[in-house]
Image (cartoon, rainbow, N blue to C red; front, side, top):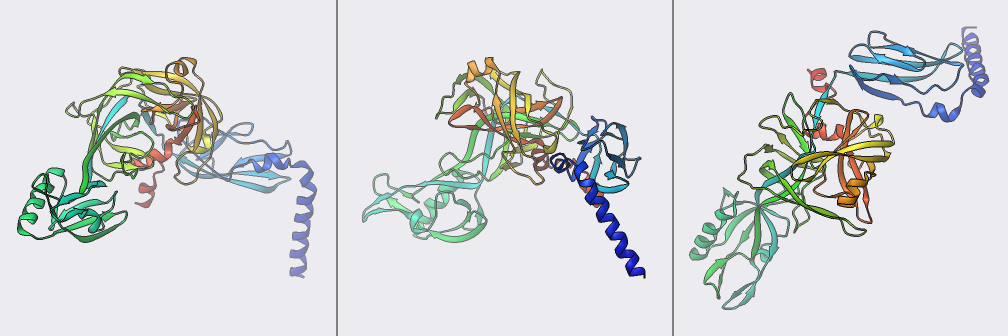
Length: 425
């Protein structure tokens, strides 16, 4: 009898659900998210209203409370649910996380980037003319372009100048060098034999190497509390090897835009800038990742346009439509320009190219032709929130390009907006 009553109960529930189907606009119902993350002291949570027959309620009014038709307001930090009900039956549950209020200061400043590599980077081979003919010692030792020389004879190498004394001594002693090489994620040892160059009467190893790199980009944001910052929005790669530069240390300094080379279809434009490596540094560089370069500022910096801390928008909050970017096209003056968010992908996990943006500002198009090299990292602002940064330009359409969502840059900077460290503690 108990089983029969249970079966009848299931039958009645299914019948009610079936009868309710005509009242549920399927398209609107599918638009309801399964999870929402928001912040304290920001705008309310606006939910899709699927039908006049459907009601919504909060599972915990200490976290979120109703603030109007299909809208809720954050009342306290924590987790709650918004439950859609039809005829008293729950039909959809939305998990809501309310995080502590968090704000960053947008950048827009043009910066010079100085990187010093981890070890010395191999960027090419060359042959040495010896008394017996031409040889390529680097290739004989199976050292490839893009490899990093970490140690010679057990001693760490950080600068090109440190290599020559080892080469000269090994050549005079007639012994090969014991070299520790990093290739991707693997490290191995090999023997590298110097040969006497018959023309210059010096010992050579047949490798072109580099220990530093420099370029320009744009500051995206910094946290006024921790002074952690993010810039560029994409990884810095070596111009010869096309591989990401593994850094030992680095610095950022102010840079001055002298001219703009406009972009055309098939040819990206470029900012022409100057800066000095000896200039007072703004901060250090500790990471070079697919989401940009990151480190810590020595002191607060101002852009003269939006110098107050602003809230951020997570990827699911970004909307298609008008937005603005902050960037420099003359000297060091940060200016505000109009863009349009053509599309944005709500991302649950870190990923680059989360947005497609289009430059719509007539003055910026007149001066640059669209997105140019050096503009990478320019912060994107929408509805008073920092939503991301410009990263790449479309080669065949310089008016358009990609952007990265700000939450992934914050994550790479080591800024815990989700409070996960506190929860773990």
